[in-house]
Length: 177
Image (tube, rainbow, N blue to C red; front, side, top):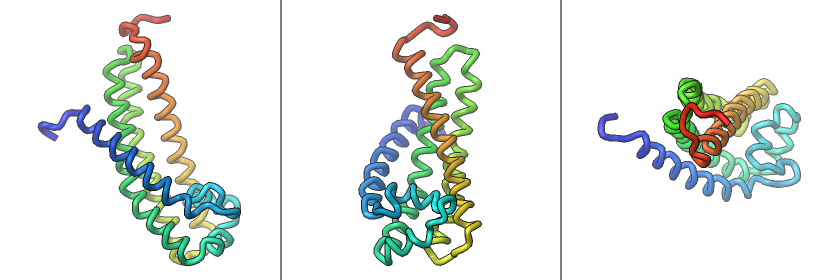
C-alpha cells in the first residue's frame, strides 16, 4: 500500500489486537464453568475430550449465543493478531543479523497461517454451535486450533528472542556473544 509504512501497520495491528484481546477476554468469562474451565479455549478442544455436548448443555441458549458472538469477533481478531505477528516479525527482520533476516521475515509471512487456521477452526465451532454433533467437526476444530497455537507460540517465542537479543541488548549486527 503506497503511503502506509510497515511501522504504521504494526501499530494498527498491535492496537487492534490489544483492544480485541480485552473485549474477548471479558466475553469469555461468561463461558467459563465446570465443564469449560477455559471458556472458548475449552470449546476449541472439546472434540479431543469428547465433552462438546456437555459443554453446550452447560452453556444453555445464552451461552451458545455468547459463544457465537465470540466466534464472530474472532474473525476480526484473527485478522488483527496474525497481522500483528507478521508486521512485528518483518520489522524485527530489519534488526537481526543478516544470517537471520530471511528466516525472521519468512516466519513473519508464516504467522499469517495462524489466522487461516483460526478461520477454519471458527467455521467448525460455529457448525457445532448450530447443532452439528459430528465428532469429526469437533476434532477438526481441535486440529486447527492446535496448528494456530503452535504457529502463534513459535512466532511469539521468536519475537521475544529477537527482541531480547538484538533490540534490548543492541548488539551490532553480525557480532556474536
